[in-house]
Image 1: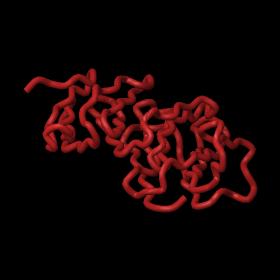
Image 2: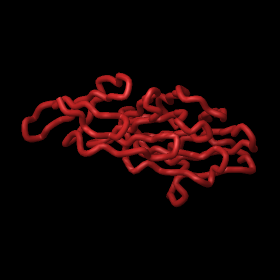
Image 3: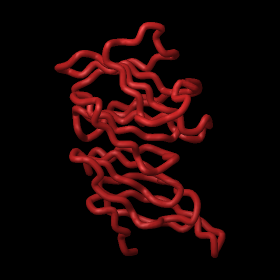
Amino acid sequence: MQGVVRTDLTFPHTWKTEVLRVRPLILPPRHFVYPLQVDEVERGALEVLIQPSAADPFLATCALGFHDPIVPTGIWSTPNPDALCAMSGGYGYIIETTAPERFTMLPYRPVFQVHTAVEAGLLLFVGHQAILAWGNHGEAWQSKRLSDEGITVTSIEGRVLYGLGWNMITDKETPFALDLDNGQLLKK
């Protein structure tokens, strides 16, 4: 694993983590690879030692998406205090720390930005054209298409996300406002 590794523990959580620079020579008794079926997962993978609150620690090996500084790598707490989000080169994994065999690989490949919306109780994942919201019980919603190629989040104010999406026909950035309760566009 190379590059900048972010950590955002905004949401309360029941676990501790340590991002390892390299995989240990001797693996711990509990080791999970995400996703389950992947070739050459070791190359650039994010290696995270996770200590759940009421279980033995485990090593999570998260396959690298893209080796590019434009996509996020790191650890985020989620609205569910027992789950964490590991981002590895824009590939996102939501891992249940109390049952690490249960995980979700985010459908956006890659995720370009991760934002916390505390008041709305959401972790937000920005893709090429839309935004995915993750709440306490998993996926809360996905927005409709907001851009032809590229979204810029300009601010999150309470339960509203403001941003810009590029419109191919006009070749301009078009502003939008998204209701974080349901992912719908707000009327101007």
